[in-house]
Structure formats: C-alpha cells, structure tokens
Length: 565
Image (cartoon, rainbow, N blue to C red; front, side, top):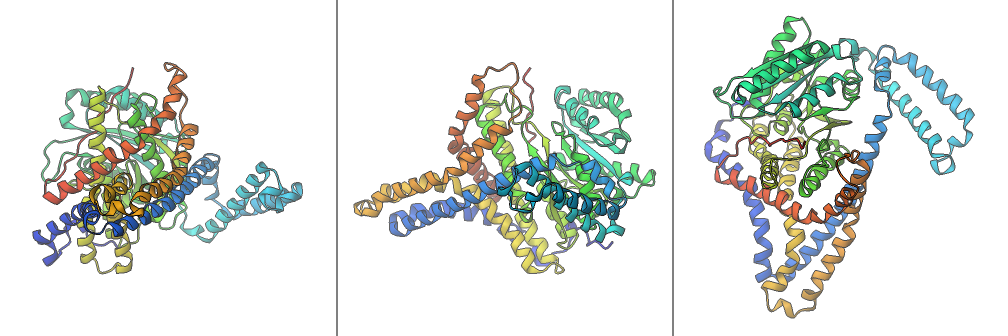
C-alpha cells in the first residue's frame, strides 16, 4: 500500500511563509466580521438592498430547515432500524456470503407466497409486513455486494478492537461506567483491547485509579494496559491528541510483539465519559471487515449526550440535544461527515498518518484532513448508526457549567484552524484533483462562517433598516419587512417542532429522583433555543475565529465532568 509522505512535514516553499499562513488564519474571521457588519452599513446607505437580502436569506434558511428536519427524521429512523439488525449474525455472512444469499432468496420467495399483498406499495399492506420485506431485500442487496468482493473480506475472528480511553483527572464515578459498558457489549470481549491513556499531570490519584481499574477489569479483555503520558513532551500542547498519540504508539508496539497485522486492529478513541452501546463493536466489525477499502475509511458512531441529560441545566440540555441531532443529520449527507469525539480507524491508517495531531486542540476533526491528504483524497467517513453515550456539560455550580459549556463549544468552533492547514496541504499535494480539494475546503469554510453568522443574522438583522435609516422608515417595505421575516421564521419553526418531538421520544427514562414535573421542563427548555444559538453558537464561533485572526491561538481546555449524586 502506497501512502503519501506525512502531510505535517510537507515542503510548501513560498506557501509556507509566515505571512501567507497568517493571511489564511485571518481570512475566516475577517469574512465573518464583514458579513456581520454589512447589514449595518447597507441599512444606512442601501436599505432596500439589505431588506431584499434579509428576505432571501430567511427563505434560504426556511428551505434549509425543512431539509435538516427531513434528514433528522431519516437519521432517527436509520438509527432505530440499525438497532433491529443482528450484526453478529451478519458477521457470519462473511465466511460464506453465497450460502446466505441462496437462503435469503429462498426466504424472499416464501415470504411473497405467504404475503401476496407485500408485492404492492406499503400503503396496500400491513406496515410490519412491508418492513420485513424491505429488510429481506436489503439483506439480498448486501449479500450480492459481499459476493462480488468475497476475496477481499476480512474474517471477523481475526479482527481486534482497541479502545483508547483518554483520562486527565476524572473520578471513578465517571470512568468506571465507561469501562463496564465495554465489558458488557454483545461482541467477544477477548477480541477487545483496553488502553487507559492517562496524563502524568493528572497526579498520583489518577495513576492509582487507572491501575486499579486495569487490575479489576483487565482480565475481561484480550489485553488491557494503563499508559501514562509524560507531561511536557517537546512539540506538544496540553491536550487529548498528545495523550492518545503516545498511547497509540505503545499500542502499536504491543500489537507487533503479538504478530498481529495493523490492518486487523480497529482503534476507537473515547473520552472518559463515553459509553459504548451494546452493538457498537459488532456493527463496526461488520462495516470494517466487509469494506475492501477499509484502511482508508474512518468510522463515526452517533454521539448522544444523554448520560446525565436529566441532571444538566436547561441550556445545556438544549445544546446537548442539538449537538447529538446535528451529527445524526450529517450522517444523511456522509460526504460532509467528519470525525467527531468518539471515532474509529484502523491501526494501519493511524501509523500512516503518524497517529493524531499533538498540536491541534481539535484533534478529532483535524484527523479527517490528516488522513485525507495522507491517502491523496481517497478517504471518507462512514456513519455507524449506533450511539456512543456521552455526558452533557455539568460542573460543580451553574456558573461553572455555563463557562465550561462555552469553552467547549468555542474549542469545537476552533476547528476553523484547519482551514490554513487544508489550503496549504492542497497546494502541496498535486495528486488530488482540484475539483475535489476545492469542494472539501469550501465545506469547511462555509460551515464555520455560517456557524458564526447565521443565528445573529436571522434574529437581529430584520429590524436594522427600520431602526438605522429614518428615510427608509417612511417606505412601506420598511414596515412590512419585520412581518415578512417573522412569517417566514414561523413557517421555519416546523423544523424546531420536529427536533422537540424527536428529543422527547429519544430521552432516556426519567430517574426516580425527579418528579414528573421535570418532564414539563424538558419541553419548556426549547424556549431557550434562540439564546443558546446566539450565545453558545454564534458568539463562541466568532470568539474562536477572532482569536485565530489575532494570533491568540486557543489551547485545549478540558471540559469539566461532574456526577450528580
């Protein structure tokens, strides 16, 4: 397998000059500030222009909200459909797909004889019957694909999963449930590897806890090890990337000592609060083992910030649910999907990319670009429709929780720091067609600019021409503009209704310590959406882009994790 030279060290000649790098760092923040300032300036000098722009922009977001709502419904249905699949049973297909294809064809024929109405569209027959028919047809399609690539399939019994659990100084109450969840999955745990990657700066208590947990649970896995990441390693910032990279290199040594090929090891990175769903490894094993291009893929499960959703304050619940649903919607557009939080790659790919970035505070999203350039654009993120349960932000006090949430979202928004990297590496790598590179870079740029500006534009801009321009206030359009935009946004609220309904039906059971009235607040909390969208969305993104623009680079800020007892 040929892999491009490591992109971090590529020679970029004049494009590597500090002035060029700074220009690329300044551009996103500059564009965002210009877009925010433009409505004010145009309201003063060209109010009619800005009025029609506002109407067009609101119409665009109305259509976008419909599309996002549709994708959320599709993603939610896909998530639940995947839970009905016997993924361990599908792993057996890989041994002899031709045999199972014959069986499935026979089942389809027998099914059609038992249910003649199933030949008609779904509205002509019982929903359950149609669902069974769709499943059988999907199984047949999948088995045909497996038969076509049979010699490239990987035997599941030869596959190992390594979980690198990144730890700083989290307590046992956070860490132990994550390890217990790994020990209780529906996949053979003797094919699982547990690495507790803890920081030296976490102190003696963290080291003692890591060793205790390895001693307590290690026998359940193929092997388990606690690896201490030394503090102050040259060229690293304090962050998750350096920790898991150090652990990844140690893992590689262990795998090679056991004569296991790196392609047969899939590595998933978890934070200390991440809890795998029961079918995560069986599902991931099937996707990986059945993909001929498996090494060049990343695999992204669905983050569900539901571990403590009933305990978190209302604004954090809205944000946590919105973050979960955003990834779920993006899975319906896998060409836009990027590595986020818990994600998986083969150990072979990690070796090819020199593991994760040790200098980026957003090592998860940055890993997409490292892999994309290492494999000359032959890389994509594959959705895994099963949850990885995570904590919503919860600190010791309400004020601490607000600060921790803002810092977390600001760090996520600092993913715009990948823009200079992506542009420079695109110039350095002529093997990727520019048509591909431009599209990828535009998605990155446009997504972050929209993140910073859309909420403020939708909420505040409609009133500016009327307030700032006395002459325009005498025109009929000035007085109709707020009503027009308000009407468009009311129609767009259908998307919010869909989000609220799915959030209510997807909530975990209410803990016994809370009264039924708590459920009412789970509905009322959505009134905070405009505030959370601006404060924790746009302002956090503007903050991140402005810091990059001014050269005040953002470091890694560990999100505080707390348990309500």
